[in-house]
Amino acid sequence: MDRRRFLTLAGVTAGSAILAACGGSSTATDTPKPSAPTTAAPTTAAPAAAQVSPTAATGSAAAATRPAGSAVASSAASATVPAATASSTTAVGSAAAATRPTGSAVASSGSATAASGSAAAGTTGGIQTMVIEAFDYGFKTLGSIPGGLTRVQMKNTGKELHHAQFMLLNTGVTPDQLGAAFAKGPDAAFGLVTLHGGAGTIAPGGSTEVILNLNEGQYMIVCFIAGDDHIPHLAKRMLMPLKVTAAPATAASAPAVNGTITMFDFNFTMPDTIPAGKSMYTVTNTGAQFHEFNIGQLAPGKTLADAKAFFDPAPNTPPPAGPPPVAPVGGMNALSKGNSGIVVLDLKPGDYVAVCNVPGQSKPNGDSHVHLGMIKAFTVK
Ligand SMILES: [Cu+2]
Image (tube, rainbow, N blue to C red):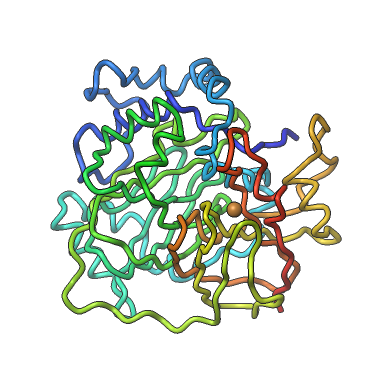
């Protein structure tokens, strides 16, 4: 089977997708389908068909030579696990997600007001809930939500792996400007945003949950994962603007957590053992670069060494034979320096790895964080 590699952000393609998808609207409730008419930014937004054409994407990916910014994207390394294998793994938070179908959020989000009401209605334990359906290729969720602590529940109804990365645009930056920056290259684009975590990579049919403290401002929710065609889902318009309005006067109190997981340049400080079943950990990035906490469950008989060889193969070597040694079971998407979020886990007993698939941002084509040591084994029991 084909190894799905760290993906390269197809800069021009992604930029066009952002421009086309945003088009000045911050209240979209559904990622525009590739077949949707494109009305925005005529000079830079290619027709939808062109944006998703393998030829166009491959071309821009080659030109981009995997710059620093493609980093986040590389969660896609988890993308190496095929659906069939991964679907047998624990669906984190699936029970909670199942109690509130993703469709309900979408159906009621015709306007920002309605969307906010819907989110409030999903409040549990004083924390509002935001349900995201990730499909091939797009998101269905609220277009607007009040700020503050937010339980983000993502369900993957597609046939490919997906995640939901939250990027907060810097003050004054518009989605159009972000799109134009992506067209220049990821370096330019990632200078315009901070990364606020998100729902980690999950297999088709699975669910995962994180609790984020959303700031007032303009976010973009994106999926950087690429499938067998190596085209990031972002380039297939899997992105959505999210307007975060002022937080309510009375803030929800943070839930009790089991502990803290710290990400730094380049490893994790975390417990060697995590309890089976429900648990919550605060994930904090104290490093200079941005990092992510992806969780992979090791297949029976597989070890940390197998996972390392899989995520960080020696140059010009074929992928290890046999099925992937790990299956993605969620986690926390990339956080910029100083940011944190809570990962909500529901893990089965077994052997796992925590892995950051971000490439180094210190130089062009920097070594992957896995290569630099950012992979760690832990046990669930
Ligand atoms: Cu990292």
